[in-house]
Image (cartoon, rainbow, N blue to C red; front, top):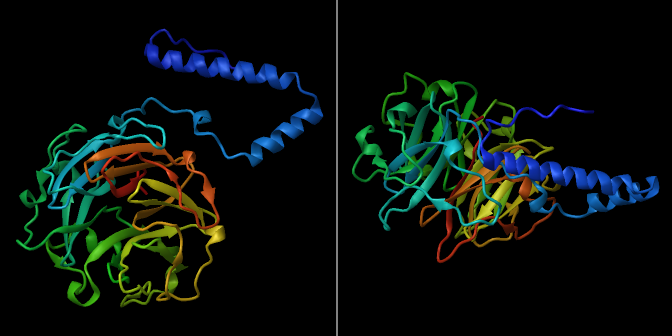
Length: 361
């Protein structure tokens, strides 16, 4: 198939150079393959399939077109800012990232959220009280810039702090996870225009403080991950209307992440040490009921987060020193078994504190 080369005279010189490099590479590979016999060509394909992909062979896009999707960064005390996603350039997995939210040393970043600027942001506190804020009300800021306190928009109590944040997608269900492993399943209208600021969602004293949330269409497989790198998977239909215990925890363990997963898909997991992996659900069986003990999902002393992913997703990770990195999920090899993971972020006297994927679903 011959496709005429478009006029590149008005394109940025760096992008033209990148295109020309790829064209030269394609031409060289075509010449190489053209000299192989049919039998040699089949043998070459088998070898390629068996070798783990080299991340240098994965095209690294210089940027992306302007988008209305924002990356919201929130610190431990509630300092926050939003920055359009296209301002964060992709790096190779294992890079050091760039400085993002500017905060005092004693107030490190704690959350990352991807949300469209047309959405509202739902914030849930350690007291399980919910607040709603139009994302456009947050001033847009550059990558390395100071945030503003959420107290400016939300009437939180003196002993209250943000523990969960997610965009209001306006349909389906929200699954809320507490640090003690309990789940509450609430319909979307709880978080709509009629949400009364400070509404209590459940008793944090009884079930533990909220730590994570995700959206569901109602018939998903639920995946819950814990601090010690354990996880459980079960059908959403098994969650009663009043909620239930999702995972039974060990004495020193705590729940940290919840996601809806595709039985044929995978989950990206990342530890505080900057290592990450994709665990395929084909190698992680579903439980017949919620509330059982978790099985080891990744070898780590401190799992930071877990997100269900698709092939075209980008991962964002931020460290305690406010370094943020964006890389393509295609750079992480998927595994069916328990592994320690590959280097996803280079750290020096630092640790990863939060992750998210760049897509809004």
